[in-house]
Image (cartoon, rainbow, N blue to C red; front, side, top):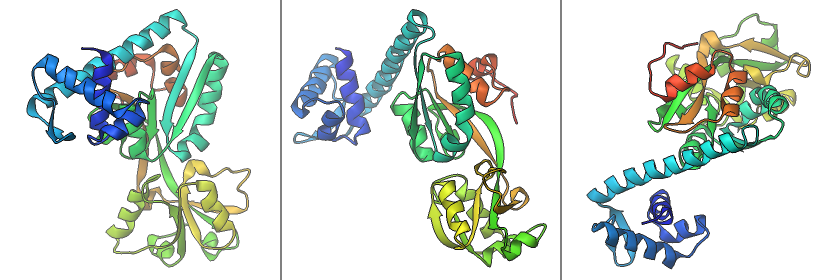
Amino acid sequence: MNLHQFRFVQEALRRNLNLTDAAKALHTSQPGVSKAIIELEQELGIQIFARHGKRLKNVTEPGQHVIESVAIILREVDNLRRIGEQYSARDFGTLSIATTHSQARYVLPKAVTQLRARYPKVNVSLHQGTPDQVARMVIEDGVDIGIATESVNDYSELITLPCYEWQHVLVLRNDHPLAHKKSVTLADIAGEELITYHPSFTGRTRIDAAFARHHLTPNVALEAIDSDVIKTYVRLGLGVGIVAEMAVDKDTDRDLTTRPLGRLIGHNITRIAFRRGAYLRDFVYYFVHQLSDRLDRDLVQKAMNGQASDYAL
């Protein structure tokens, strides 16, 4: 047996047992993938996959145990590669980060700048997606860390730590009637056309839940994944906006009035996610510490080793 066979089995599972898709993802031929899996099954003396003709139908009971072992083996192979990189070129490499647009645009620039100053030969690779996509990229694609508010804490394959807390804010044109109120209510907002995030992004579920608790239905006129887009349409007078507080800049957004919504909607916690069992290189620890000075190397290592931690925001 060999690592190629293990990767073929893992990719077949990821691609919903579609060997054609698995072959494309691995840049090889479908017959080659099928042959390698059959040879592995013959060597093990079991069927990993039940078949209907030439198609894979489902994972067998012994196959499930094989797949679990394959995942561990491939994870440790990846860790060996990272250990080699760590000691052969301690200040070289690539830091891969999966995150949402809001984090990439408003939170990460300072930490990335600090990382590049400390490790000028370390490249940064940003992968943007929804919170669920962020989680899957860390689990399946070997991305070093994931940063998101929703979802990442729901995956058993991940170890997550709280990074920082934030709230939503209402953004208004300075001449909007609500801009003259010191505080606004959800009923006030429900009476306006609302511009806010797409349901899969930046705490939208918390926004919807807050209105529902008060038996209100927001009049959502426009949904976007980009806070700058939301602010643009607010400036055009298409409605009032709800964005993450870090998306508002006191210098560039002087033409907008903001009102904090934490007491109405609640607060959000952005978390950093690591693949369980992953080996973290020095510059990963450094970058995480730049995002939150509470997340030092010792605390992260304890979390990765499964030790209890009383760390909280």
